[in-house]
Image (tube, rainbow, N blue to C red; front, side, top):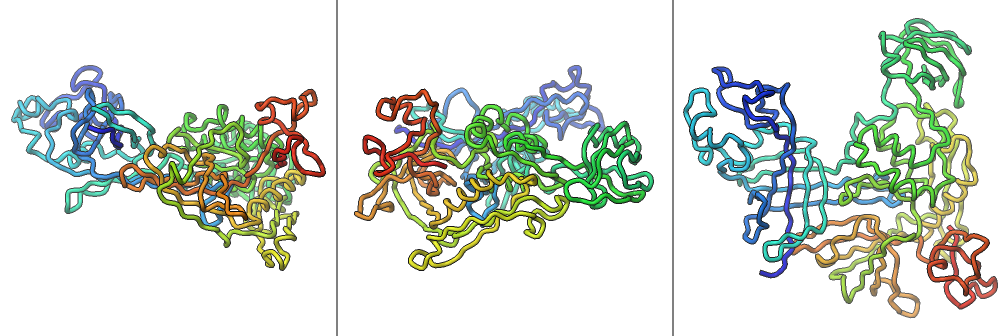
Length: 586
């Protein structure tokens, strides 16, 4: 049998590691306990003793040549994945800055099932030993696989669902990649006996309506509060201070932001009328809302703090992946602002204007944060019409083209809307006069960028960000849709791809390689083929960092040194000393 692409589905259900009636399990059959459990929490009769031990259900299509040594349930009908779409540095205004969440729909054929591999007490169901009345039954003739599973395991939401993609060759499975989701919905069975399970990527938790940062505070003033420094006030209800407020911090009461220290439920003001607000008196019952003061904080540090309020630490690789990227490409970008309860997705999404992409990497199973930058030691995947591309189409997104960026900073009052230009003190204007020329585009297209993150100015940083943003949109962003063979289906999101195609020609008609980034990936359902959408990279050309003074000149430097360093070109020819392409500055 030839090597062939295959997809398996895995679901982790919670199953108890205890044995019925064996200590510490105290469950026993009785008139009110007519049968033994199925080792799930939903059927447990001694919940205090329940010890969760995830049990993996593996599903496949009804087919031969399956791997030996594993239990597969042959109910899988089809898998429909919509993988995450990356909004590179928030470049697509029609999409959330965090892109589109990855989703999956898995359809199964429900059927009668004998409970082998599912019910640890199956033999006792048949003999009657698992029933109080002692009367046995045949599980194979009673109920269907998914009907019974749904009744025994009602707490499926939030549990892991994985899509395994690879090849079967002579009964041996070679895994290429695993895509991770969490279960959200169970639909059916329908009139055709199909059950559909749906899942989303774990980053969906950040878009939950309850996902606010900082969280809403519940403390209120127990009495009227005077204006002034050194004023003490008691919070109600009793004990709320230790539960919800730091020992020293900032708070919003009414429309005022103030600083305080706290001992138990008593706060004492240390500064009034901060961040452009006015000191005022406050009344009994007024809410004391904790304010998160972000003070010259790096992007990766802040994003980690926010993400960890909703995601496990294992999914937030700040130290290993985010910090090296930010240290190399955005060390001077420091965030300063005051935050009252705001949606986490909105906060993280608003970082996109600073030139970062935040998305879910469903293969690495982690949240990704990447500055918009040139290739820098990345794997560059090469796709050509001759060897890789089965279908190609391109689109110039002229509606996204810009001729001017107005970059608004320094909020007048951070307790008010961050989406209102009237709430900002400064605007930096970055026009492209050549694009506005009648001999070029001859029009004016303006984008207002409202940035809540630089409330103390940062004009130098803003200048670099504004010009880089304008550079990305001064010509129409170009998207390329390509279909590739299964051998090329492992290119990850946001990866750098060099495409050589007739879609990209110079003015002499030569097909030139173009650098692009993967913004979405979707299986077509045709024999393992995958459709990618690629976005033209802003950084087509030669980029590098400034070199140390002791480095030799360009001709004397090694290839490795030239790849990782910046060298000046000839000021007349604008070429390197050997005629090669010059470096570009970001």
